[in-house]
Image (cartoon, rainbow, N blue to C red; front, side):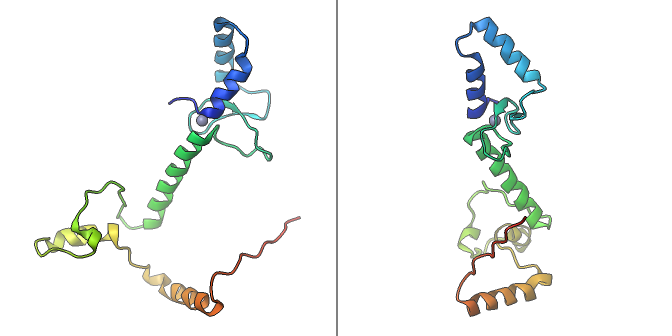
Length: 153
Ligand SMILES: [Zn+2]
């Protein structure tokens, strides 16, 4: 994996004005860790050390490209957790007639039954009441209410 933007910046800041050999040895040292500065962390995606510039020091990834990788991995995970059933959504499915939500007469029923869950997801029967209530509430209020912000002290 290539080092992300933050990792590259950090390495640059350490090795500025040094010879190739000196830079290489410094890079070697920081790759091993541990890091004295608590703001220097190892990126959760690319694995290279970077300097955490965020105000609250919560950064786990070094830069935007690593952030993107991590975000999409998280989304993938969430999708799998949500589906619950043995159906998994694959993003690159071949285009079949299902996208038009109509099944051609030559599709076998067995094939339909085994694939329909990936496209049409029925509500969880246990949650139908909750969902209906939420819809009704939504209509009665005339839209979504802003979440109440509570300050924690
Ligand atoms: Zn990274």
